[in-house]
Amino acid sequence: MTDAPAALAHVRQRMSSTALRYGRDPTTITLLAVGKQQSPESIRQLHAHGQVDFGENYVQEALPKQAALADLPLCWHFIGRIQRNKTRDIATHFDWVHTLDRLEVAERLSAQRPPGRGPLNCLIEVNTSGEARKGGVPVAALGPLVIAILRLPGLALRGLMAMPAPVDGFERQRAGFRVLREARDQLAHPAVQLLSMGTSGDFEAAIAEDADIVRIGTALFGPRSQPGLAPPGATLAPGVQPRTSPHD
Ligand SMILES: *Cc1c(COP(=O)(O)O)cnc(C)c1O
Image (cartoon, rainbow, N blue to C red; front, side, top):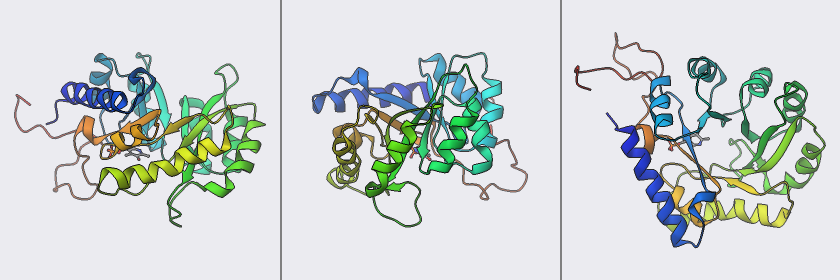
């Protein structure tokens, strides 16, 4: 089983050394721990080691975890596909949304944001690779969406997010992230500053291309279980690892 605190220290160390190598201030880069399929206990353990920002992909999975962790001052980021009928839960229970990619959803999130919680921090997801089946807006459609979102009082636009298809090799990884950085630089809008990009397999290349938020799951928590591959009788709550010995 992964030693999550050791993995956390290791990831932080890799983030810092990469930042320094590219002339960046390590303290300006946020580590977002992606807790999908992880138990509340794993999240609590990382928080005990100073981790505050946590990302979730599924509303149904996130809400009970958030309830179980309500005693901790965590910052919750929604990073999954946004279903229209889940916008109220997202607007109510999250601090950030990374995957905004259509105006209708933005309008609903803005209208449903509870007054008194302050505007919901938002990043627009950009489809940097042009793959038709992927979420995100094409770079060319970014400008009009930015203008429209800036008019919504319940949202605070902060930047852009991308999840390029995984590729091997640092330079090829960098090229994917460069598309997002250049889109941000070209917009040159004060509300569009932060770049959310980079996962366990490519966060160093993302930092080289100016990532402000890296979203890391498996490098912190170990591999996720594959739904449908569990042996019969091994039914556990999502994210709960089977115990094979009392010393695990
Ligand atoms: C799962 C996920 C991640 C984390 O991926 P790892 O490879 O586990 O680090 C990051 N971003 C998004 C949008 C994800 O769905």
